[in-house]
Amino acid sequence: MASFRSLKSNIFEKEERRQQHGAYIRGLNAYDRHKKFMSDYVRFYGKHTSSEEKLPTKTDQDTLREAYRFIRSEEDDLDSSWEQRLAKRYYDKLFKEYCIADLSKYKEGKIGLRWRVEKEVVSGKGQFICGNKKCDERDGLSSYEVNFSYQEAGESKQALVKLKVCERCAVKLNYKKEKEKARQLHKHDKERHKRMRYEKGGKGGPYNDSDDETDSESERKDKRKGNGAKSSTTNLEDKKDLDGDEEFDEYFEGMFL
Image (cartoon, rainbow, N blue to C red; front, side, top):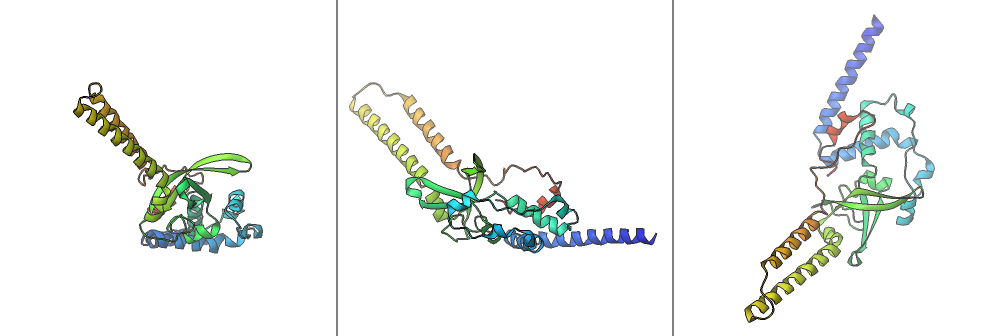
């Protein structure tokens, strides 16, 4: 009987600690929650990382070929506390969620992308700090969904990932697209003015109203195409949780925009 009371008491104590910790987490802003989860993750799981995985990254090409992984078995997490599982759940959701961009050749329309390394995940680079590898801006970040083509285990893969950049770097990211859009609009305006001159001078065939409709439709398509690059932060697809930890997702609100 004493053993049953002790077990019951332990269960109530764990639940009380879970509720207290949950209330504390909800009271933090997104960036403070990120720092808390990363601190907990390093505290609980950092000692289990392989020494080979801590080798310094030399180049972006090296980073693309190598994947950082924590080596843990299911048995290692059987007795994990709620706080530990919450931190691990957050880290797992970060894996391949955001990328880092090299915008040094943006005028040529060449954008380099790579996954984040551990140091960048922990610091919030690419999530709370501009994803351009040469920029550390934290304010005015916008989220874009980009098509990432990469090689993994000898296979060519593609994934839609988020790239968060500041206003200045967003101009670089969309430079080629905006330049092409401006060129198309200039071409349409030039053709329209040419038709108007012909109509006023009585030259050429009869003016066809359908021409303007075609131009307007092209402009609308261009506008939709331009706006399509920016990701929607309200319609992100929910990821199926294979571990049954959906209860943790409420603590990540506003952290994956």
